[in-house]
Structures are given as structure tokens and as C-alpha cells.
Image (cartoon, rainbow, N blue to C red; front, side):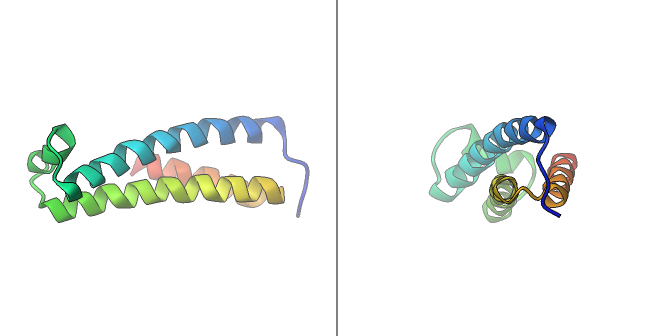
Length: 99
């Protein structure tokens, strides 16, 4: 079950970690700006989508938490050297991007 992790697993982990980090920062900041009612683009985007402030901040918070989950699980499976679960996490990331 625990095998040697190949080079492409390391490369995919680095790329996906960077993309997930950008997701966390972008969507997390948008949720924070809505909750704290900061002026600017992120605090008024909910009007364009015809949502309430709560709905929009929950949506952004969920996407941000999903990105955080992917980063944590990828590092955990890398340290455990579990190739199967690492590949499953790659698929979770692809599903997150598609949604």
C-alpha cells in the first residue's frame, strides 16, 4: 500500500498547492470582505450574482475551505507516502475546479 512516490506526484502537488493557495486567498478574502463590510469590489460582488450577503459569503467560505482541505490532505498523504489517496486527492481538486 505504501510505495515510493514518483516525481510527477511531487510536481502535481506543488502546482496544485499553488493553485489551491490562490483559491484560498481569493475566495477567503471575498468572504472576509463581505462579513466585515469592507468597501471595494469584493464587498459588492454579491449584488452582481443577485445573492444576499450571507449566501455569497457562505459560498466563498466553502470554496476557500475546500482548497484548504485539498492542501492539507495532499501534504498528509505525501508524508504517509500513500499513492492511492494522493491520486484521489488530485481527482478531488479537478472536481473542485470544474464546479
